Image (tube, rainbow, N blue to C red):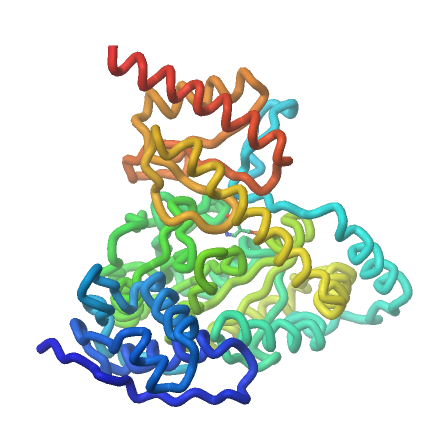
Length: 454
Ligand SMILES: Cc1ncc(COP(=O)(O)O)c(C=O)c1O
């Protein structure tokens, strides 16, 4: 039955760190997950809630926008804000390429971030610090430098809603390395992976000899019978860009629980949302079912080869035991430099600058391509995917190549999925390169549209 909530049972702690809007969205999300607010319930208007809580309306609007973006709430024009379908199902969860191509091409690569050269001073400072530090004498804890794990645990709690102890964080050589460790700790069996999806992750799993089962990336995962793990990118589906809706998150967790499968969450670029605050990690909904993978590839550089992993305790124990015997750890100098970069504020500065750059470039890309193509998802991060008929996408790719630009086809990321279009990265180029590339693409798309009309 639809109920109209005149108020919602939340209180805000004004002394707690962080914005009040984030606090409010977390409280409302908890009420929805717990089923206190059910599907179809209408929330008070942002104005009424603000009055009731004694906060400004921007606080309640920010909280509602965030929860709508995550799929917990839906805004119906003219009638209000409602709990979205399926969000209130109880889950029993705990609360707690570069692509190959001619080297002369300038690639609009989806995975390459913008690193502002003005931050070079901080980079050099960190490496000077490494050069004067004394490396450990022996094979240390395979999980990595304790101080770095503590810094990351604090960040995960603050930015990803993931409350973990430093002991639960393990440093890796990036997402694919973390995935490799996880897969090695699982019993024999297939791994389900999003399709379209991250090619490096798929190849990493295939290299272990395991079969890969294709999971249609935009459909709810209702059956994981027969697989040992499911790899997903819920905060920003790669490469379509969609945020996995709340109801699909719960369905995925329920399917994984029923199948006894591990969910592997690749959280590769969540710090680069510029419309709403980052969507909390899926792992924050069920720490016993989800292994979380983070990376420094976007915030610092893919070439740093540094990442982190938080796994359910039994999986983590097996991962660490294997790494201890094989000395399969992240290099100490890289860990030490990343620690210095975090402490110095370098990572935060780079992320802030890059986010501003992406927030400015994304609409430019959209303005150029939207007249010809449909966006595959909301625009966030450093790339966007555009749906186009296959011959048109191929013609645009060819025209870009002739002008010296490389751009990937959406089909390059598909296995069984039948999608066509372009994936346009805008992080690894200059403004001038991006403008030239967009001019070439729009000319090609214009020609294609003209020839289909005639
Ligand atoms: C979906 C996805 N996950 C993770 C990464 C980063 O992987 P790694 O940390 O292994 O460099 C990328 C880089 O492009 C990516 O696109």
